[in-house]
Image (cartoon, rainbow, N blue to C red; front, side):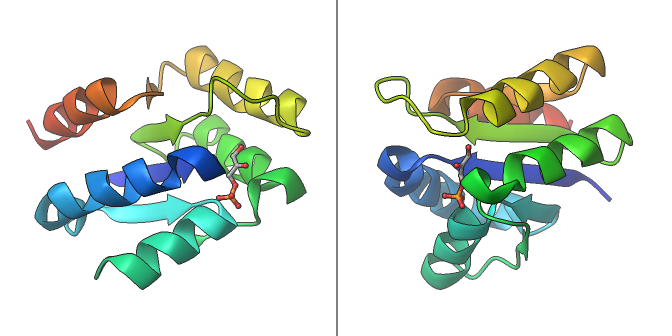
Length: 122
Ligand SMILES: O=C(CO)COP(=O)(O)O
């Protein structure tokens, strides 16, 4: 089964929820994981089932990165806030890096996220 991670920084969470609603039937056929607060928002605001990891600043990005390293994930949608520095920037960099190390599909904005899930379906 396709396993996809969904993550968004606070300013981008509404965009991710909208994205998840738009693609809900497709996402519903995947195993979804998310960082803590993102996962809660998705579960509260859509019908999707999401396995929640720790919140990003508490290690959630690293937990998702470890799944990438294990080859357990088919893709990562990570709507980063490009306009604000995050306290856990090293963890964010680590996640992006490990996606590149393992050639795991990674989308960091909505346009590429749409391509990513289209690609996962085909
Ligand atoms: O900070 C995050 C990703 O770097 C997201 O974490 P939350 O989903 O817990 O807000």
